[in-house]
Image 1 (cartoon, rainbow, N blue to C red):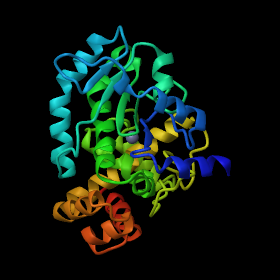
Image 2 (image 1 turned 135 degrees about the vertical axis):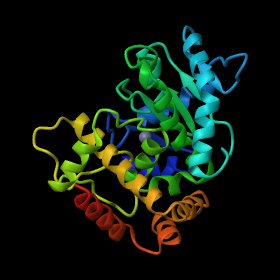
Image 3 (image 1 turned 180 degrees about the horizontal axis):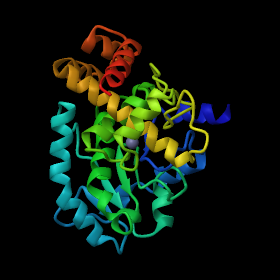
Image 4 (image 1 turned 120 degrees about the vertical axis):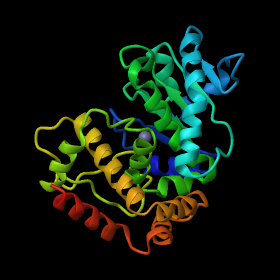
Length: 287
Ligand SMILES: [Zn+2]
């Protein structure tokens, strides 16, 4: 309960918003990690001379240059897909040590490869090392979150269902965050009943997890997370592809700060459960 109160208080801080990229699901970040992230905002780090939007831990200047080169295309991709220009430029921080990254990413751990927190994007050293190929997609994924966060309040952000936020981010980034589960695997899981729970709203007690109706018995937590992201992306893509004008109306309502259920109704004149049923049936017929 104390944590809940803390969060409700923090929600008053502009853009007190946290989401984690796939690979780690932290349902409820500890207060000390949130405080650490606020204390270590990437804005406090040096910025590139050629691009003041990109900040770096000393030693990560080359990493920052890579991000700076990728940034214009990533920004254009998000603005085209989500229907509006960024409300303001989003600071991006890159790190060379897991310790500095963990201190800034609101989870206290270096596990997630990218995080959007407090309207900033922070990126793990792993994206300039062993997972370097994921950098363009994860950068774009996190910018999707930060783009929405620029328009809506922290409360409205948290009340958007996680499956929608993540499905959208994976879709607009071309797969960022769900690279390790194929569409075929996700479709088979849905048909076995191991499908994501289509919640109407998000909750302050679960800031990032997408729940499954029945979790596969032997899957690791990380596999379950990536499976959920993949299914969420497939459903959001289906919403987009079956009715692009409806999707645009829904996105516009979301960016105007309308509650999710109202935004879905504005776009599709149906509730999201009926839409999921149609999506699941279409998938089954398509076999
Ligand atoms: Zn995400």
